[in-house]
Image 1 (tube, rainbow, N blue to C red):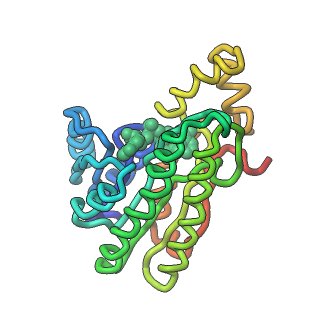
Image 2: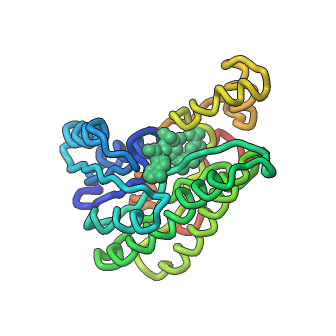
Length: 256
Ligand code: NAD
């Protein structure tokens, strides 16, 4: 169903972005993968998707902490019918100890880049007469946790930005929505386990069950395949009137 469409997925050489790229390619989209690195492995991931799906997958390097590079990513892709803003990092510290550089990087990569890629992609979508903007926010775009000030602020900001994009495109065949995952087991989450173990003096299993999945009533991680499925749904005809909203994929977190 997505044949002939091109999807640009930011931060997609691992985790959720890669899962979404794989699912969109399965539905026939050409995909553009991205991260700030430029390794053989990055290009090999694209080649593997092309081999598995039969559709074109390319890898384009762009450091999304830089607004010009974020815009250049879209220009270089040449076509962008589906924009998935997914790149993200995390840093955990109390506000008064939060490193200024980390704050700036998180806001640049996770919030400002969404402004830049969207600004570059909308004219392409308008020209093509169809478009989907899908922002990967978080349960932390709707609720907060201590020590994650920059992340929570950026993710709430992404939800606000999504609403504005939806209103500015409301009369056009373009929609903008945010997906708000709870915990998904990816390298980003994995990297938080050692710090959390140390902070609470807990072992790995206890951190996973009692800290990470504490707020996820299902007590299960969401999968990258499931998030790819939700993104694919937002690209379907059934989702034409879904715009300016959030879809939680959080095992009940935000129902609590
Ligand atoms: P991940 O670390 O596997 O993926 C993050 C991606 O962003 C990687 O491809 C990384 O290379 C890329 N990236 C980081 N800095 C970048 C930069 N400066 N320029 C370009 N790319 C950059 O983590 P993930 O869990 O797959 O996270 C993907 C998104 O999902 C993030 O926005 C994250 O906040 C969000 N999210 C994750 C979870 C979860 O539980 N994993 C939950 C809610 C939301």
